[in-house]
Image 1 (cartoon, one colour):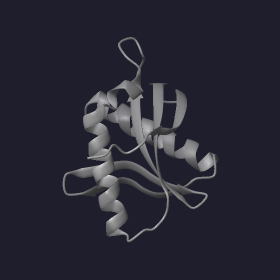
Image 2: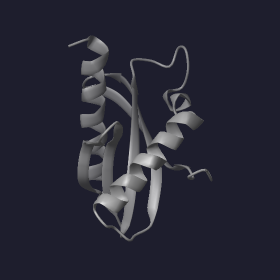
Image 3: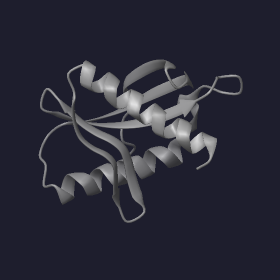
Length: 121
């Protein structure tokens, strides 16, 4: 497996541990339906929280959250809509980004709650 893939997996593990420590319940990790994917689906205070995780070794070139552009947001919203319909959920939904920067065992985690709102299509 490529080193960046391993770093990404470790970043997601760190993000999940962070969320659990903050009282979130993890519903799914890497949930897929067709070509759609959600990194982490969690719940807290009766709200469904869709979390996009961005892991980087450093921020020399750009902030990790900058990779979540409008095209990525549209895919996330479409995937979340599919998830909600698939599991027949009726609850508020929030979209967060967790950035994980560093190396395994030495990560800096930043949690951006309500990182974006679903755009109107």
